[in-house]
Amino acid sequence: MNTQIFEWLQNTPLATNISENWFPWVESAHVLFMALVFGTILIVDTRLLGWTSAQHRVTYLADRMLPWTWGAFIGSVITGFLMFAAGATNYIQNTPFLVKMGLLVLAGVNMLFFQLVTYRTVARWDAGRPPPAARMGGLASMLLWIGVIGFARWTGFV
Amino acid sequence: MNLQAFSEWLSATAFSQKIQVTSWAIPGIQTIHLLAIAGLFAAALVVALRIGGRGLASEPLAALARRYIRAIWWLLLVLFLSGSLLIVAEPGRTITNQVFYLKMIMVALSVVITIWLASVSRRELERPSPVHVFAAAFTMVLWTGVIFAGRFIAYVESY
Figure 1: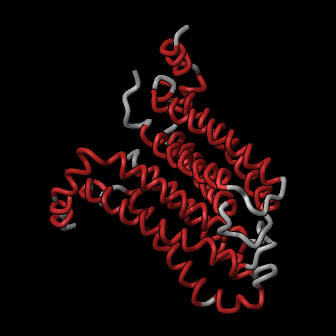
Figure 2: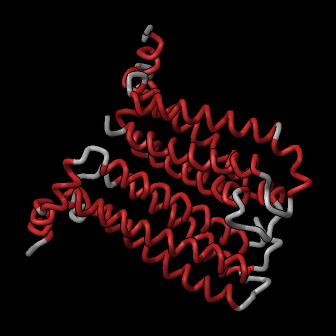
Figure 3: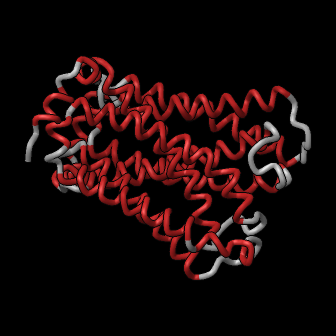
């Protein structure tokens, strides 16, 4: 693989400054954002699965929770990119990191499919028990995010 | 026996050794610890927002607090158990580390405030006072501090 761009990234003043001084702060902020992403999406996923929050309409819960998920996701991407820059040449050879990124893509595909297909009929099941497709979407989301977090933690041990 | 000696003894026990030589054990336990703090942080946020009249405001405070504060207690149990395993596995990293104690103080303070907010919520206050809103916001500051301190344990030298 051509690694020049990763070497360049890792040697930028910003990246060296992070790896020398700020890595623990950026990493802690990344964990904080991750907690918000996973925690808030879990509230929606467990509602889709019919496990919790039956007193709330799916759309109401999603409208109240997902802005937090998205805001924190943006924070995760920024802090994640800064961490990546600090050690780019290592991360691109780190198998758990690559698996984490693959799972993240799958979580995105799952969410897109849910938004564009499953969610279109939400009016029919908004107040009740979601259909199998929505339950599957919630379960997949939950499991994929657990995988993302597990492989992310493992990344630091390689 | 001082903490140093206790830490060395604990680290030498068969159970601690077993965790230390199992390569996936520490990242695995840390992942459970992370998933639980994520759930707790979001549950605490939902409670804090509701006390501030935001978030899931259509649900009465008493009912919402009962659901979400119960989740907080169960997740704290998971955090306590997984955290205990992490201490047993690497006592030299934690019980001789000042950041670990800072983290525990913040956890204790946040738990006390949450117990108080739970009792306030049971009284069906439809308009919580600014003191309650401030206390709820303060728990979020404390949980944020807990997350930062948890990560900094890995970076601050134990004595």
